[in-house]
Image (cartoon, rainbow, N blue to C red):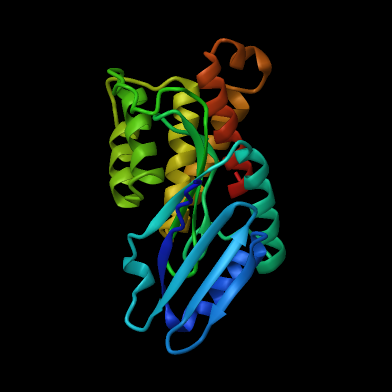
Length: 247
């Protein structure tokens, strides 16, 4: 007998329709929609099924609920979801509710991105890139450690202020300097965080600095060739995010 796990997620009752609009934009179909005696909906996309229970007093901003979806084509889903959201909203929502985050390699062996729906549920979509799903050891080097921890705070714990503190401490270092690749990643991440937190002035400053690093220190394939394969992948993701954010 085959088993299947189906997440049951909360939803503020009056946000049922915006919720369905969001998942429709992602290519989900509504297979069940109950309005009374309480709101309850089911959406499906391929083998993925999500169920939502309407709650009158539920606060999306305080939500900790969510689920993880594993796929063998995270790149394809990322592009499809972004395209669907842009068509539905006229833009790709990067902050507030709903939103979709960047695609990146995580230190626990998956390549993933995060979405948050209109009612605050975090949907993580990832593809294993390693047979080892445990966290990698914390790097000893200052800036590698900062990037490792900041990525976990942003895209696993979803603690944006905590990530800001980590990145700011790294950027404030005076006795040490990050490599160009590390500097690019730190600045793009800090700009991304500032934008998500509504600090547009800091976001613009950080993204301008990141664009300068990209143009002067990492302008060609020769500079990237000196990096490890993992570092090159991280730089490519940072450059892609910089372009998305308008840097």
